[in-house]
Amino acid sequence: MKPPQHEPLVLALVGATGTVGRTVLEVLDDLEVPVKALRPFASPRSAGTTLSFRDDDLRVEALRDGAFQGCHVAIFCAGAAVAREWAPRARAEGCAVVDDSPAFRGEPDVPLVVAEVNGGAAAGAARGIVANPSSTATALALVLAPLRDAAGLRRVVVSTYHSASGLGQGGVEELEKQARDLLNLREPDPPARFPHRLAFNVIPQVGAFVDGGATDEEAKIVSETRKILGEPGLAIAATAVRVPVFFGHSAAVNVATVRPLGAAGARAALAKAAGVKVVDDPAQRVYPMPMLVGSEDAALVGRLREDPSQENGLALFVSIENTRKGAATNAVQLAQLLARRSA
Image 1 (cartoon, rainbow, N blue to C red):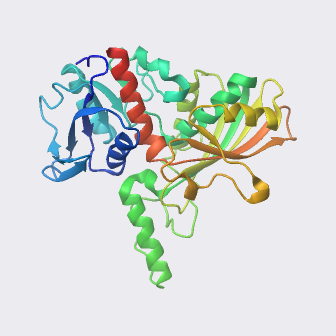
Image 2: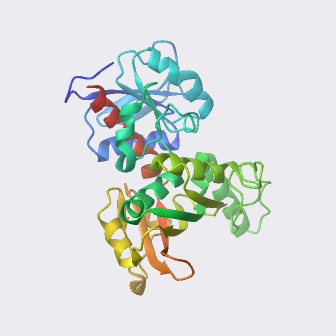
């Protein structure tokens, strides 16, 4: 269904009761997105509960045939299985789709979009579906795109620091319980969501291992970043690590550019980039950290310096709120792009 220009949107929100779904509601308010009506959907066990949105208490429904009729855009914040089943059905009912799961990210005919980096790609959504990248790929694309535009990219090496919320509310609760048990001199239960105990530990495994020794998360970081940047041959190496932080993903990034840029040039390019906030005053102990991202709708970048061990080398550190700019905010921005392009 195409909204007339300037008409407030009729939005469907799938996975409305989850961490990202609830953050979408906050972002819609914070960005003052005009919404005529919002229809929240969740699993059958959450159906019947209510969510507050602006001045209304909205009743959460289970997905059903006809759920998307009359909606302009549906934002999917549920898992990949739900997206694969219901996103095509939403399209069949005339509703465009923004999907935050991994279901369609690798599909060649589904654009993978960070609004500030390749927002124009949303116009190529031939199937009416746009994929929202993983939060780490979003952060990388936001900081790499301005460097690429200024001096080209030759190679990128990234080590990521994934927070517990990357596994949803269950990950947060498991870390919290483990920390509480240990601080009270109790042996924690065996981990259910993580490969090992996460509290007071770091785990150099995010996702399942695949051929070659990488994890599927590391493979996704590489493939998604290449796709967003439109650089299929870019040399990228990734190591993903889970850390005992509740919210906020971070990454240490080492970049080799094609042409000389230097720290000053890189800082200037990043300072002008949309979706990026330079937080970089090491003398005052100011640099990106998960505790700073809060409600930020940008990737924070700092510790920016030259790497003398290689030609045209740069090193930097980036943090992003994985449930907000890394998920909900970008999804809302993509919904707005889809609505404008179909108007």
